Image (cartoon, rainbow, N blue to C red; front, side):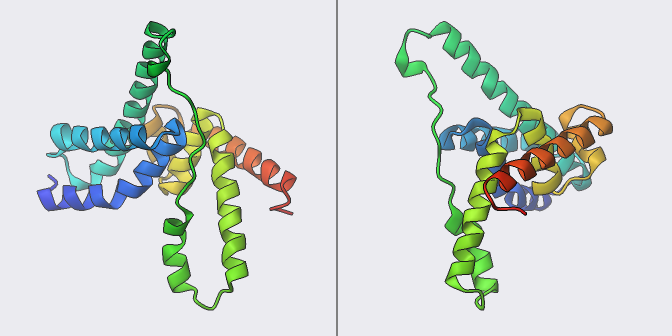
Length: 188
């Protein structure tokens, strides 16, 4: 059984990554924040009594399902209110907070030049943009495996698919990212 402190520590540890993951999917800051908050509430309400070791898997599954629910609600809303522009969701490009991403990097690598840091920021931004372009399941598998650092079995359980499917999605995602980054001259 997870203690309140263990649950709190776990939620703090996944907060920023969860927000970024939701943001990759929905491309809306407020919606992403709502999804993360809803997911955290569901975990605490329904699974707070589970062992601490089970929390990461449960949370990833809840986050995925909450994101899918958001998309379903958007689809329903669009179908019901298609003539009312106030209710339509317009996709827009959101700038990512690269300063936050590099806050730790800049502090730990003060010997790196401003040019190197700028180049690194440009590369990360290009990668983020390409991750957004991946098909949904590939993006989800890629983020869980490489962003959340989950293993294949954990990712498969969280996504509700086989381990082979996770490997296929990740392989295709990595190939698509490499191809796109080569086309931009970022990778050799």
